[in-house]
Image (cartoon, rainbow over all chains, first blue to last red; front, side, top):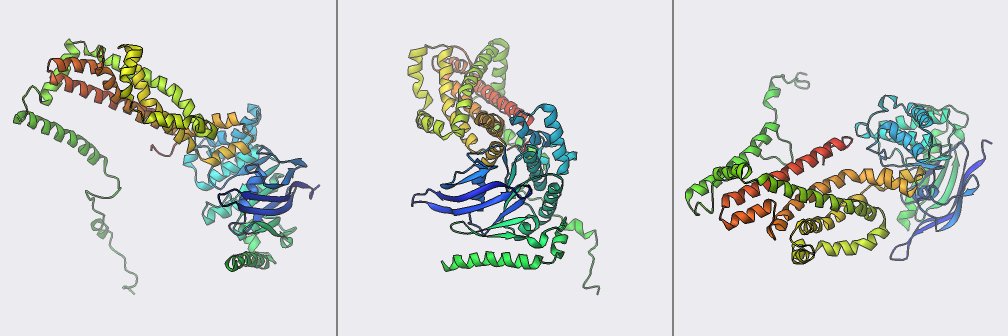
Length: 265
Length: 281
């Protein structure tokens, strides 16, 4: 069942209404995400990748097209599609432990189970020492770890991440990316992640869905064959891998091609 | 080589320490300066007041010095039962303010959270905000007579509209991503309102209360000098009849002090209740 489809996006279009008739953000986008896969949505700015993720989350409705998770149509936000945002969303009035328990509390998980699951995920993101701390004492990276633990503890069927490391400095970003891979090795998770960082995409993704800009359309889907069967734990592992430079160059050219089209248009 | 890598003697560092300048944009000053300056402004104020009283630009009966006012204040409390007036005033401000909050907090939060509620109430609230509360005094006198009800009503009208508007604005400013986080974790509308919108807006709502409580004190005197029966304002009107300027000034002093105490208490409450915030804003 490794490659069974969990999320399917079919012919999604999105036009935001404006005074001048509307801005077309997405045109006829179709792709699917397989169970336990990390799928990255990549593309130049203005390609509508965040809009697409928000549609999957149920925070926006598509103008046309359909989406389904495990065969069930998606209507509005729900627990099964947990989301981690680029901005820090730890609730400042709750401690780390209370933040991670928050989603489970909403869903009526009994207290003992809630506590146990929260502590497990807090351990997974290396925040056990800070379980009783308030977010104001945490760094940006730690706040994002709280958000990831909180969403995972809520047992979503797919984890949606909208440029989760975009606000972090370069070094913290590495650590966060490596930690995400570490979590994926120990838990069965399906992730759909949006980024505009090419190296981040290659490092994390099993598959990259590349969108072109204005309006956002599906340009190509990249299977990262050179990573298949390789144990990649750190950025160094990736950079040393045969096939990495070619892959990075190919995506850079895709990005640049998009930029050139913009200029010509 | 000695030219390329030259160490600067440690003693030199002392000389290059930045000098504390009196006028520096937005930079912190030592606590001792703050205290000294804060006391100095009052010393200067009382000195000018005393000098003016001595100079005789105005008859002593119209401009008593600070000493006379403090004596009057003491006499008021010790001999004229002024404490009763003060308690009546405090009671009026508190009761009317609690009633105003009981309406403004839920309504403001709902207006800030839901555009439909805002669209319904906003034109109404905005219109009332521009009507000066004292203009209702004749009406209130006819409806409620000269007793407590009229005073409470004026104080209520004086703060309620601004309170609603401020609370609605603070609720509107709650970060959208916090709400979306709760929603994507499975939160229902009621859960999001209760567990995200309210706690996120609460610190600023308390600040709005602090600001409007100060306004409530200013309306107190207006409420009490019309149809004066009891209260600080009533005492001041009685004093005016007998040209007791020192007592009028003592009344102003007491209102100022009470306002300061209220402000301090709400500030302390805020600091205590919202320790999780980065800093007091």
